[in-house]
Length: 193
Image (cartoon, rainbow, N blue to C red; front, side):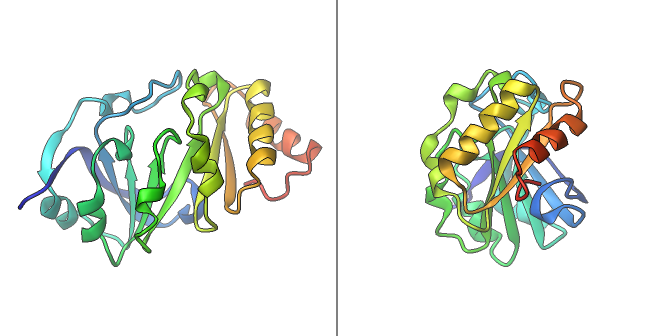
């Protein structure tokens, strides 16, 4: 039986963030998303795409590092794709609102899980269990747009004490990156990136 996924685009690039920053990767952007963040920069991936067989998707993978992104990749059943990508290091970039545990059975898969900030207008859609389940190989990511978002990120960090790396980035044009650095210094957040 052939399986297919709705794919927005597949492209090769240098990973721009997280644990594999600076390394070559193949990005598979899947269609669909269950959230509508105020600062979304990939709204075109909500509906624009084409159905592709899993084998055709895998045939376009050029590098050992693969990032599944979206939209929200967990809106589709990606198990067959993950099976086909064994032998690769697969980063699933997810929005924090859908259960990540069903994918822990894949040794080659790790997550970059967003915690949606207050300024995203989607903070109430977070699935708290995800942040309790994060493993050392995963990443917790905060994208912040203002002081309230920084305080929220600190509160979430202190509540869950994640075992994984923590990354913080700025909503473009909303907060100066130097303010994030100052906040990290003020709160002695030496393990944030």
